[in-house]
Length: 552
Image (cartoon, rainbow, N blue to C red; front, top):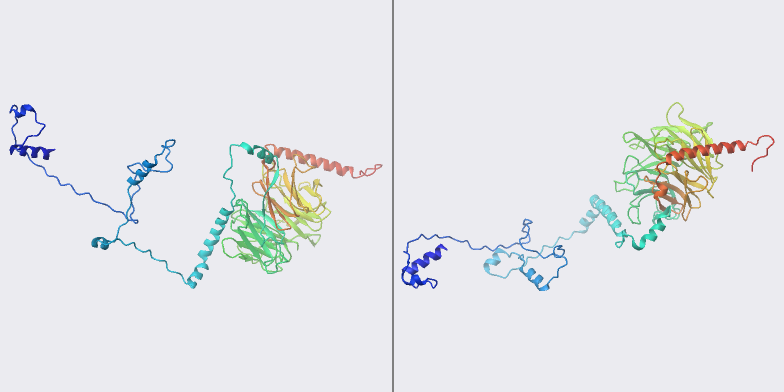
């Protein structure tokens, strides 16, 4: 240290005692060094500044230089923890102190904690204005649905993915072809109402629509109700509830508009709902006019492409109307369905997925008809007779694959039968007589070409796999009441069934039943050819040749 050396030199020159570390030779005067004058360097050291932080001070997130005690240090895993060392470590940590007011610190007075400012209490008028504001209603409606989903979830946090004791249960469940997944029922909107229509959202696969007729025991409630249920979350209330003044007889999601729902009513009106608006009544509706429908609208569907599409509706008055979703004041086109100058009382209508012109329609006069919307032969083209009761449902083939099966059509009737038709041959391919009551509805699987489901008035759902067996259903499910409507989801793994007690039951299909095999299309073509031959042989045998009695 230069300061220390200079001080020692000056002290020695003044005759003071030498350092005790001096050697004996130096005491004797041997080897003494000559003292010289050295320059002193002065350095000013700034005093340490004490820095205090308040709660409002914002600092950068820097890595600490010392070890910080945490609760999840993986490096110390397996080592013992000394409580005394941990406490000492906590005491050595820096503490954050609150700053006192400058005036109080200068006067030496004791620091006084600042009282937090109390929020101003809103008046009744201000509180009511906030509760009725559109932004608050939208926020509360959205947040309530999210919280309801979270509270309704029932998740097993102790699930063992390694197997263990659950192997047997999983094996038994895998053997079930169809199992019940959910039952949707609302005490207010579903009680004493029957399901009149079902549809799955093409934009949100977890949403299923159910339409209901009037509740005669509650005249103060709306006559027509549409509920949108969510199969993804374990909540018991519908996502949306729409209603109108007339019972809803048909409904569907707008194919190219994710927020719109179309409905047909008992009064003959076509209505349109929008879930973006807080109102639950229709945003558009067609007028009660003789230029449109004058009887219940029993079928509605959206056809076309994303850039050019229309709404088509059919009624029991024998009229087919084409509408624009932008304006329901009057139909763009009307087509009268007539056979031998008599209107066809339509009960159901369906189009092929890739054809917006040709259609099939079932009627109350026991027949199914084919027709087209445009062209020189617009209207009814051919009649397919065979049922002995009103036709309750028709379904065109839905699955797309290497073979075009758009000419294959199913029909259900109150004569307890399901018929498979070929529009190329204009004849029956096969008759399914396994049902034991009115067949209320049926639908094709959208992914498996050989699978369809039929629902009857006893609440029974029969799943037919044509490539496996044409005399007995491949799987069967049972509901507690008569099933009015059934629809497959777009994935083909779920089926919704609505009964006359207002319940919507969702069934889950096993992958072995729902998913098609690689050779499914080829096998179905062979099966259809064999069924046609068997039907032709049976028809020839029933003609009673001469000398031969009728076959019993």
